[in-house]
Image (tube, rainbow, N blue to C red; front, side):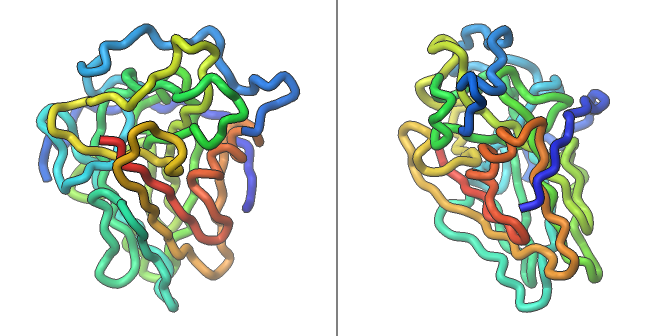
Length: 265
């Protein structure tokens, strides 16, 4: 895998126009990357903690093709390798679908990120780390950003954001840069959560994780993208080699990519 370290640069605040409801490797100290001063305040898990459009918004994987009222649906298509294309899926992938030829239709519900916390205080418990899509100017407290660059099909590429939706800060084209927020370990038990938040009544969703990460797993699966064969430029970038290694256990691969998914509600 090509490892590139990239210092995160905040983006401009997203516009308010949204498509609504349609449809470890620790360092020597053992505490690399833990923001001891950035613990989130105690949240009331069953409620929305911030309005959509705030910097900490994230994207979760819906189980259906639309999102509940009060959230917005993000749509994007990645056009994967055409020659002997092997893009595929296994197990649960929510409402993500494979294209009629080669490619992946991605669907995410944009939700407030303040209700999400790490699942562990152990910096070595990488199997408990999980990720969500970044859909705001910055990642929520106690998470760190990383980017997976997918080298999509070179010839006649049709990768794009679909349906007039908003997928920023991720971008899609012949080289698609998908932004994630990785939740690792909290500095104290008060900064963790024992289960994933029940964000909206009736909403079933998933996150990017191995089956060992979340409590009360309902189902698991993965999506495999057969990325461009010629002069492949896939990469996973983050603020440190440690974050790259940790994120690489969830979004895996070198010249091709496998995204592990787990349904938690």
